[in-house]
Amino acid sequence: MKTRIAKFISDSGIASRRAAEDLIARGCVSVNGAVIKTPVFFVDASDSVMVNGKIVRPRSNTELYAFHKPVNTMTTTHDPSGRRTIYDCIPPQYRNLKYVGRLDYKTTGLLLLTNDGDLARKLTLPSSHIPREYIATVSNINNDGINRARRGLTVDGVHYRPMEISRVADNVLRVIVDEGKKNEVRIVLGACGCPVVKLHRISFGVVRLGNLSVGKVRKISQKTVDALVKSI
Image (cartoon, rainbow, N blue to C red):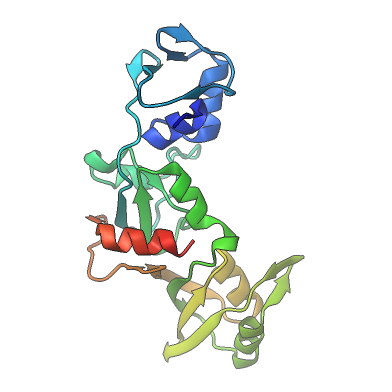
């Protein structure tokens, strides 16, 4: 089955789809020995695709990994400010994988990695309604504010869907969201009078962090991958 060249490159782990389109525009991509200049070009596993003179391997079977993100790391391939990124922490053999969504600089815990760019995109769509579970340490508990978050609320013109929130200890909350908007837990709890001090993600859909050590990577079983794919 033919697929668009930028998607083929993205799925291989070489670059994001947008970055692949930029590589194509700069004449860095060739197919069967001929340089192409348009992303409207389709290939399959029988074609010889090269980026900057290096062969691009077609996507293999979908693989998914759990990574325990450390604090003070950016979820990106490169940070213009020079801050440490997750790829500075991930073992070398996994650095060609794509991250699924983002955790902000201070947030720790479960971050999914995959070799399938299309899966990464689908898993982060708000319409997928995949639950993410966090443990939030807050500086204050405001029960009225928490009840507002449970019903859903609007902050600075952005609407956030209802969150499941329960208290697990003094100033510690368990929060489950299914939307995936940027910094939504910090924003909503802050607006509700419960400013977040620490935030730690412990699950993404059926995948749980468990006892995975900080900075370590664990491959997810095919059964769990299949269950996650079926949920979207």
